[in-house]
Length: 173
Ligand SMILES: Cc1cc2nc3c(=O)[nH]c(=O)nc-3n(C[C@H](O)[C@H](O)[C@H](O)COP(=O)(O)O)c2cc1C
Image (cartoon, rainbow, N blue to C red; front, side, top):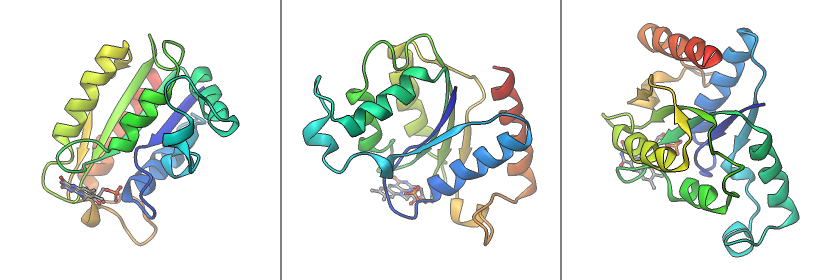
């Protein structure tokens, strides 16, 4: 199973738009994926699902991750790094069955100039610790508000070229 993770729970996030774009384009290329949006975390997630406890709602998310062999993370830049809620999710997931010896592909998103280069680097360090093997081609989409059309899709020529290349490599990875 292949799962795309939209790495924030912010409502109306650009991250979710990019994640949906990847899901649709991967489907056109023949790869079916499941999209997990961090807005779908249980409301009492921090109180109920950390440090060994697991609610019924989180157990379903855990099952999804356990069954996933390849992850594609779309991760926004928050205060020069990746969102804390994403790290909290990683901390809530069972080890080693969630991520160990599996594969991941990383896409950074920001409204500023750097496309979450630092946050992707930070997240890459966590992946290395978890033995989650990150595909070498990581993308950084900066100035995201200029990158999305009225349908919430990427449309700039250069971005389409690089995202297409990354998706092809991800399918083969
Ligand atoms: C808490 C928070 C911190 C942010 N920090 C940064 C930042 O450090 N650099 C940056 O370029 N954009 C920053 N942004 C803007 C996001 O990159 C921007 O909202 C972009 O659309 C991706 O986030 P989104 O998926 O929540 O929309 C921040 C946004 C939030 C909500």
